[in-house]
Length: 143
Image (cartoon, rainbow, N blue to C red; front, side):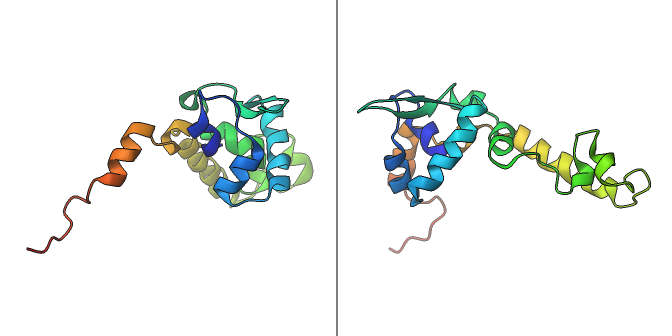
């Protein structure tokens, strides 16, 4: 998704390009884009210049959406699921003393992810070049 965010506005990116950039197997990426497309996060274009692109600007894509599309529910344990039917799986959920911990962990993770968008992970192109060419502030210099 970060690669698609970097490529946003320049047309579709091929999975072969992304696989090379991220050093990931193309077959693995093919599995991921199925879930991302079903979640409405990416669109695909067929043909010689086809590929995948974000369905909306990176600033409009929350990291919660991305993680849920790729990983499913954010709950660290089934008992912390937001699904009210979890009680059918665990009959201890109403009297479980650790459930509160897992719910708080889930909420903290969701809060952190909700506070970030894909744009937060995609540095602006112009300033990225400036950052790479600038020396570190506070770096030691020799005279």
